Length: 172
Image (cartoon, rainbow, N blue to C red; front, side):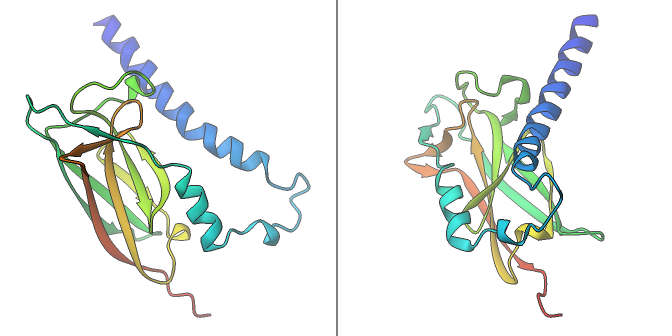
């Protein structure tokens, strides 16, 4: 029982660390004096280029196992943005195995907004802040990814789910 507790604590620590590391890298690029950040905004082409850097090769699911499938639901959050509920079938989230060799029907999810990768997700829920949405329609896509980040696919088609949501009204 003690070993299980250590595994759970270790996995939780790894998830927190992997969540905070990108934030620390992002804040390291902010002006040290807290000065003007207006020049740091990205336009759509820069965001698309960033998203393109995050493309992962497809990985065919084993024909010997039931293929994973995926859907996701989007719930408006009363405070900000949306809460995403990720509903995979025949798939297990394995946050402690991230960056290890791929194992059939397990791994994590990636969340994309309008084709740009926003996050890695290690469980069934994720909060999507409105700051990553543009005004009007936004395609929010979730993919199932193996531990090595390749995208699970079946017959060459990436296993994914896309939902269209409305972004914040930009009028003053």
